[in-house]
Structures are given as C-alpha cells and as structure tokens.
Length: 509
Image 1 (tube, rainbow, N blue to C red):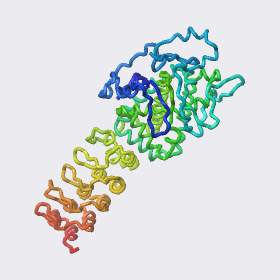
Image 2 (cartoon, rainbow, N blue to C red):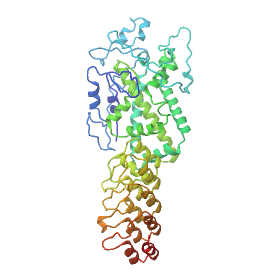
Image 3 (cartoon, rainbow, N blue to C red):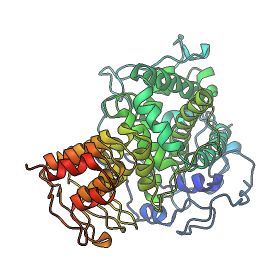
Image 4 (spheres, rainbow, N blue to C red):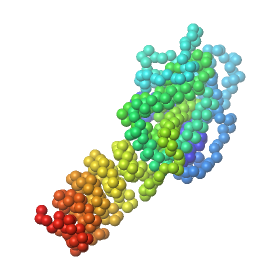
C-alpha cells in the first residue's frame, strides 16, 4: 500500500473544526454539508478519490505543488500576518502585502476579518497536568517588559481550544515538509508491517518483553522531539516574543491528544497497537477518523489544514520512530521474517493464526479482547482457533480459548478431514492437550469421525500406541466398545501389537 503527499493533503482539506467536549464524542461542524461529503470521497490511493485500493508496491508519480513545498493548500506563509478569509472564496489570493504599510502596527495580529466572528466555545479541561520540557534552549521563553504573548495561560489552568491568534505565526514550509516526511514514513511502515510476521513479533515485544517504564521513557522522549519540531515551526513568533513555550505545549496537547493519559494508561499498549494497525491498513474511514481526531476549533480553512497536517505528522513520527527502535534492537528488516501461510485474506485473522502458532498468549488476548477477531471463526478448511491451538501444541492458549473467551468456541467442531480437536490431540499423543480439552464441560469424549469409519479419539490413541493418552481417555469414560467400522479399540490394539494397551482395555472398569 502506498500513500502520496496528495493523499494526506486531501485529507486535511476540511472547511472547519469544532471543539470536542469529551473523548467519546466526535463532532464536526458542517453547516453547509460539505465536510462529510469530502471525507466520503477520500481514498488512500493516489487516484482521484477512488474507493478500490490499488495493488501494493506499484509506484505512482507524486503531484507537484504549483508554488513549491510551502503549504498543504495554498502555499501561503503567514509568519506574523494572518491570511485574509473571503466569504465567497476562502482560498483566493489576496493583496495583503500591498496593504501592510497602510495598516496600523497593532492590527497585524488580527487573524480573521470581522465578518467571520468566531463562536465562543466552552473551555476544555487540560489534556495533561504536566508536560515534558523541550530539550531546545530556545524553549525557555522569558516575558520581557513590553512584550505581549498572544495567548496568556488561564488562571484556572485550562488549556485554550482556539489557537487562531498563534497560527498566523506558523511556517507553512515546515508543515509541507512534515507532510512529505509523514507520507514517506507511513509508506515504509505499511510495507514493513505487512511483511511476514512482523506485526505479531512487534506486538509480542511491545506487550510482553518491553517493560512499562521503558514504554513511558520512549514515549516521553518522542513527545519532547515533537515539542521541538512544533516550536521550530513557530520560530518567528517566538523570536518576536509573541508566542510562549506554554502556547506551543497547549497546541501539541490539543493535536496529540493521546499523550500522556491514554498512551501511558493501563490500555495504552493496546491503543498503540490499534493505531499501528489503522495507520498501516487500507481501512480508509478509520484512517481518516484517526488523523482528524483533534481538540481544537477554527473557522479558518488554512489553519484547519495545518492543524490536521500537524496531527498526521505527530502520529506517524512517533509510531515510525518506535517501530524503528524495535527493528534496530532486533535487526528486523523487510524480507527476513518467516511467513506463516494461513488461508485467509483478513489481516487480523492472519495475525491470530500466527500468534497461536508462535505461542504469543499476550497477542492472542489483545486480538480477542479488542474484538479484532471472532472467537467462533473457522477457516475454509473448518479449522477453529481451538483446532489451531491443538495442532500447534499450545496448551496455554488452548486453555485460554476454552475458559476465558466469550462466546466460547465449539470444542467439538470438526475440520474438513472429520477430526475434532480431541481427535487431533489423541492422534499426536499429547497428554497435556488431551487433558486440557477434557476439562471443558462441552467436550464429547466419544466424538466420531465419519470420514474414518466413525473412529473415536480412543481408536486413534490406541492405533498409534499412545498409552498415556489411552489411560486419560479411559478415565474420562471413553467408550471401550465403540466401533471404527467393525473394530473396537481392543481389536485395534491387538492388530497393532500393543499388549499393554490391550490389557488396559480388557481389564474391567
């Protein structure tokens, strides 16, 4: 899958954003009905809003910006001067430069014409009670006498939700560079995640082998990097002492809303994997929703584009950096991972098969608990997750599937060969798996395989001489007189010369 610069640029071209008052509410202002129509027409491919994804690996030429890499929309740089917003055509060029000399100096900070008055939204609670200081020395702003920061911190500690007064200082060339980097990053990330078992190997590392304290440290580090990047985009405003470091912190909190509470919370590791899945998938609606999930308000189209472009860059930057750290740590590159060939086209089901076969209990629980897979799923050969756990010799995962998953899978469901999981476990002579299956209240110890003359698990265990399995099955009240064709288990033991098993079967209960 490949995404171009225009894909992200199209995504962030929305008319206006509004405040989100809670994490569960998704609300966009769409008075004219164009916003969701624009989102519905978006595609992750390079073609003009096509809905069918193109083949991965095919190179497509990037569209050239008419004025160079200056802005995701108009290319206007407004460091210290706000763009004029026309009601009839908000994207038209304007003659601001010729009017600068005639305007009074104080009016240079006006960001919107009077005919576009901004609604006063309810103040939002702070995203974070504390923020990580930036490593750049220029981030320590000192309020000098005569300086006038454009956004003074509220006495109540509530972060602002409207940043129009500071957005006029944002360098559009920096934003355009972010879009290019984000596009390259998400393309490389998608290629790596889709290769072999990379996703489940990273997920196991992230959930099991990477301690929470180290997760916090690396997320804190990446937050500091983002803060430096965002501060650089406002360098003109900061040098003129119109923007303080706290203003940049508040903007980053509104755009990178997952940090710190969500990502560092108890479900943070799962959230990180969910975002990695969405960023590298072709589920366009989830992709668009994720990249547009900001907590800001504006009626300025240019500012809305910059905010969404900044959020896209923040997410892609953090996720690619952490995956790159894992790849360097484990020397994992594209093409050197072993691919498990499961006959399924669904990425989540493919990962579930891989996780079971590798014994990644934490990844299995993640996929099930986040509802990425159906516990009752079976493939085109009739193999359920329970059957896969048995043939993969994974007793812990088998116990989890039988006793901790709701709804419970059918332990007696046979595959296309007619064997049930108990048949498979008895045939392989695995006592632990047989015992685990027999602990299920739903298991049928005398289930038959109609494609094998109605053989029971006891017949198969006797045939292969698995004495311990035969003993366990007999203790579970397996039928000694069940017939496979015309043969009882004792007849099979006699034919194969298993004297000890024959004694066990002929001894009275």
